[in-house]
Length: 206
Image 1 (spheres, rainbow, N blue to C red):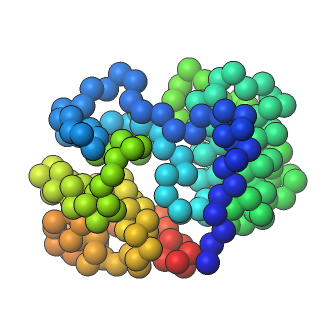
Image 2: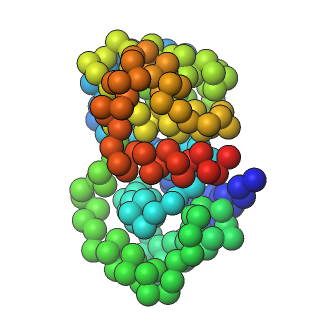
Image 3: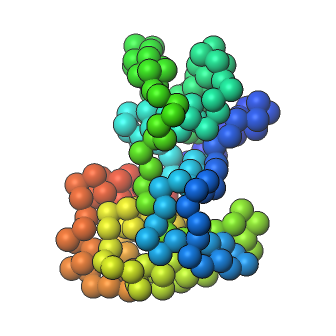
């Protein structure tokens, strides 16, 4: 069983790791959340599922987002927060980070222009934090929305993978197809090598 993340330090220091949209306006508004028919890149929701950080690329992206969402942090404070996240014992990452690798990450992130938002995946359905829908109900809603959209993108598939993983169920091609109300062939066409690896990693964490 995977270890839960230790978010207490981030919360204690009021580190922002989730943020809704800023400029994009939803096309449909419901009690449970918002729908963006063309999608939005502005919503950042780190650590919203139990999926852990499994790659160097993903770790760097998470730290970039924290740097971007918390411009008040100075270099020392950011490094302090980053040290907590890269510590495998705190439940954020699945791999050990060497001292040199950590230094490289800190340097790369510190060079990032805070005026430019980090690359973010497209989100079409965003549920409110206080939404009382079950995971199954959420899957049904997202499946209906995505099913009405123009095709299934790799970002759509990744979002479905995280949602299925949240239910503590194994991710399969047939479940992804059912989630998106499409054929398994459509899923296979949109599955990148990176998604295939992430699917195996998420399943191995169950």
